[in-house]
Image (cartoon, rainbow, N blue to C red; front, side, top):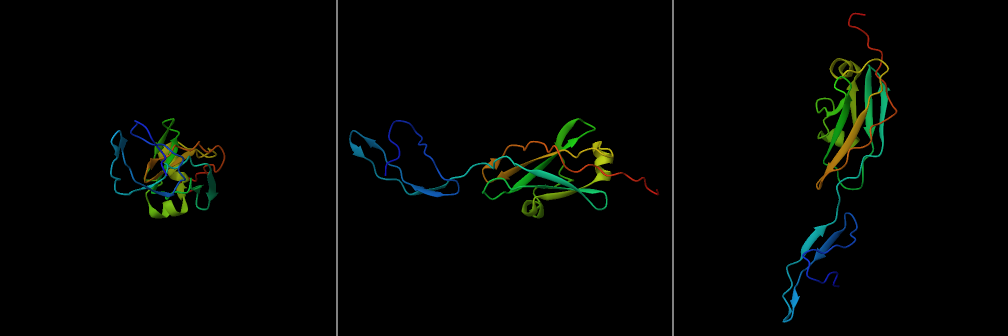
Length: 163
């Protein structure tokens, strides 16, 4: 089946994600058709779509658990969690709090954060909503950052040491 003919150097067609396509190429001119190329195997894919849902829950021991849904069908190689740093008024990837390359984080799509660390290092106070964004990377690259969560866990009451 011929899917493309013309002088351009590219062919574009509707491909099903994850499907393997086998192609051969030949050129035609006024003298006829050239030999066919070797078979080229191409797997269709796309960078991950935006993570659609992020949830955060207060759990025991003054901690917050964040969870997110896997975006798309492709295998995810890594996540990045972007935490809003209140003391700087900006988002930052904080690998020390949530290592998105950790196989356990990739598998379960969850991280647990300490309210004390959020208070001490990131400017959060009792009652503040933890604000995060997440994005995913597959073999084709990074997807877009999710929208920041607008509901979820708040930082627990921080009890001073010895009190």
